[in-house]
Image (tube, rainbow, N blue to C red; front, side):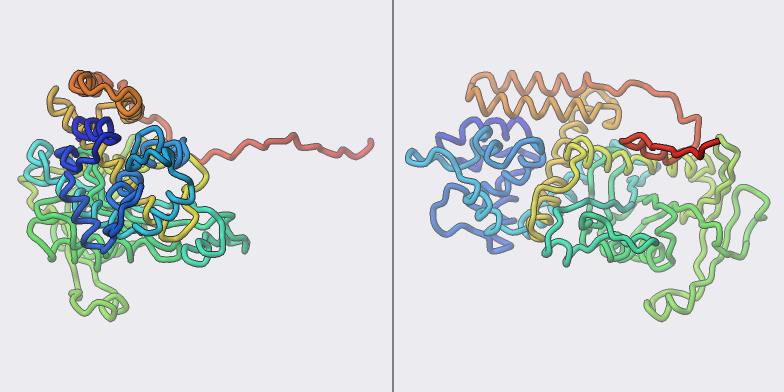
Length: 443
């Protein structure tokens, strides 16, 4: 990916040849994304639709720079002797002409293809490990975004200062590649976004859920909608079941749960009862937790195997941290100020994140280490530097050596080993900016 992308960026000022794009994100995909959404540029422009697709990916890689700086530094605009620079208004109009649909199509197509690559290298007893969870992003506060996305309402009656986008993603735990995603208004429940993604989860997979997704409609749709699609999810404290095999005092038993009449009224395909295997796990603080799973073969899937799979669920939280803090720079809001621009920016950011994660995974295979052992922060900074250097120097002959150096550096950026957590997670009170004056009564 980066090898051909560097060639493309370095040679683009001479002749925009889309055949130079890489093996991971070929030009044919970009053409299909634009054609399928009717966003083709009919007349000659400095920023045709195909260029704007790459602009949105580049903006995620250089969140700290303005759109004009990214265009100028990477040379993404079609050369024009009379107007060497692209104005801000021209870039904004080009984004509006493109819309968000091409970026969404490109993300869906590329993510499924990339997650299928090298999958045999990361199997857990023949299954690919995924995790599903939700997250939020803030947007600029204006009438359009607030009306469409909405914001969080607090119990005190206050409303959040900024509109928020709610989303749910399915992430491959072995590589942290985002397989699929659904985003929309904050007021839409995460369960509804999750239902959109269930059908797209591949066969021969194991998906780890947070307890908030404990729903017969979601879990039954997962197991019955494909072949060998399994789940692991912690039970809630108020979950009720009937033990049909083993004893609840043990650490491995089978339970049967009733589907509520309300759920069956909404989804006629739901059975009256559904079954799951329940295992009891104890953490370092001696807290007991019950995990429900569809992996009922006790000989093949041991108690410890399921417990270890659930512990890896935190990989999706790490993925969100890499996206929101490292790539987006922990900024207060997204840079886009329109509804369609917000969706466009999110899909472009996910594509850029997957490109980085895929390059890390490819480099990790060479030295036979886990992709999660490579430092994402240092790899991200290294890729930023290499892309910028190639665009500035235009030194074509040095590009192969630069790419070789990049791959060698990626596999050397292994994360330092850290001890396991010793204390419970806790939300700390934010320190006050100003000292509090205390009035004392006279003695």
